[in-house]
Image (cartoon, rainbow, N blue to C red):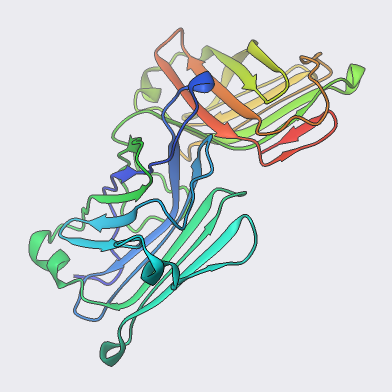
Length: 306
């Protein structure tokens, strides 16, 4: 069995959501590597969308790969806190020696602002993965807190986007810029990942409907709708550009981007706090309809970004 094995990942990213924009939290693996041997290694980096900031030092955090399980906050007392280092209000690092004779070490870093997690295990006994599954398909779950969402992508030796299909349709927002109260300079820019397993059945022209809602501590908006008539540009790709709306979508790589410049956006009170977005992407009159929620990273005067 090779030292780099990746395939069917089942992820549970558990974080508290908010009722105003209730929707399953989403996560996306950027990379995942397993070395299933006695002095094995496991590395993964993933980003997630969530509307909550979990208390890293107190909530239960666990990583499960088939028969192997590691719990970061196992006892949730002073002995656990000892392994965490708070770098600033958004960044935490975990570093623990688990078997000095074998060189066993577990590291974890969490960036609450970027919503990004890195886990690095070296010298960890992962022989159980050799015994239970010789195919390279390993269900993986990561838990942070107590609210569940899941996605089951299929990929082998996966690094960044990959071209393998997902077990279910999938939509994840990666970046957002929401600039409002700027007259003709208003803009909404969004990049994300969209996997649609029935993409091969789509006609040469499809309507993409993007519905956006937002909830802040001061003001909010609901059901801001952008309709984009996409046309096929390749076997798995679509695009549209009329000078105001620009959108591209590649189902093979999963990459999507959308921007609108000059279309008036809802005017919000300046300097919102804890602003949360909900975005729904509808394709082909409901054939694909997926929504995701996420908390803004920065909130300023007339500009909100993620």
